[in-house]
Image 1 (cartoon, rainbow, N blue to C red):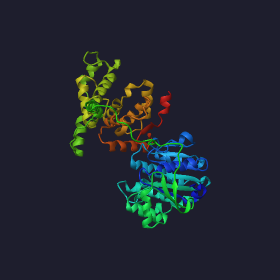
Image 2 (cartoon, rainbow, N blue to C red; image 1 turned 90 degrees about the vertical axis):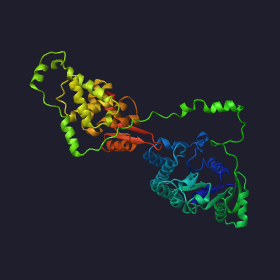
Image 3 (tube, one colour; image 1 turned 135 degrees about the vertical axis):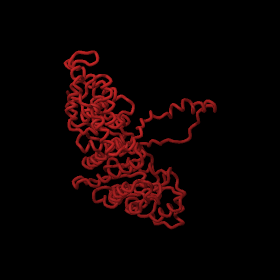
Image 4 (tube, one colour; image 1 turned 180 degrees about the horizontal axis):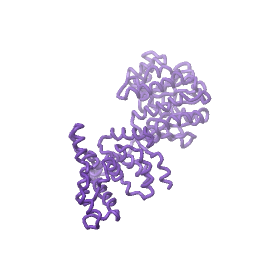
Length: 480
């Protein structure tokens, strides 16, 4: 039974069938037979339709590899250039699949009028994207996806978008989405509620509805202006391409004895499940009042040098180097690096760290009266971030770039910059948390948001959660 594609563009199609009824095969056959006639856009949550690119001109868009803005921009270009695409979502979590597809469909719908070319928009597993009930997804995600699917099925025709939605269960699909289809292909189903809804859509009575239970794989009952004016049996022909589950069937089991199989299951099991190294746990901090902080700050201030100390530093001595040799700066840097390398150093308060720094300077006979709390915090941030590993030219340029960065976020900003200069797209999350002095992923995310709002960095995060960070102004340093 042929399907009138030109009629289908104005009347939309609903496909229903249990798992194994041949629903995806029907969609594949429809796409292959109309590939040269009309632009096609496939929302593919299971990765079943990527093989269309092997024999046809379809472009596979990996939803996990792009940000929300890029997905919307790609959808606009798809409409502009009339490209046939498959939006592959199998690498994403379910809610991220739903959000990605909703943004893509909305951008297709919102394309400018001059790009309203005819296109088939095929949505497999439509009950995910237009659920009848809220389920466990976030409310804003549900509103977003329902709006996108409703626009596609209700208002998409005037924009050239012909929705083809396929679902395993009609009872799980939002009624306002299903009701907008004028063509129906109903495959095998067993639940009474789904059979009754399918029979109602096909104009069949309860006795005739029993036929739906007896359908074989690849057999459907069709009705609609693009198919037939009365319910007819439709048998789906062979397809040129196959899904990733094509050819699945019985296979002989491996000829492996019980003892050998048990050994294969348990060999090096502990090593395989061994997780990453545990994060450093921040030491418990006692809450302190403003008065206690003020007292600590005052106690940490270095005492003014005595007259005899000034005289001692003026003459060469094995205990205190002469200032004209300028070893003090190097010694201060070494003490700072040693302090930065201590376990849990970044989790201690600046006042405590400053006091430890002054104590270490006195123990090594280093004069540090010219370093106050503000200067210490900046030097400590440079030491923690590993700026000393860079070349002298890169260090100087990075110091100039970090002049306007607040001391509270200077260390993680420098760590991101150092990682970028070493060719990394982003620092390790655990390392960034350690430098920031926090074991909370939420605080790290808020830190990145703050740095981005301050126009210090640019964060790109795709739907798979992969984050790439660029430091603004760093290109000139890298080119040098």
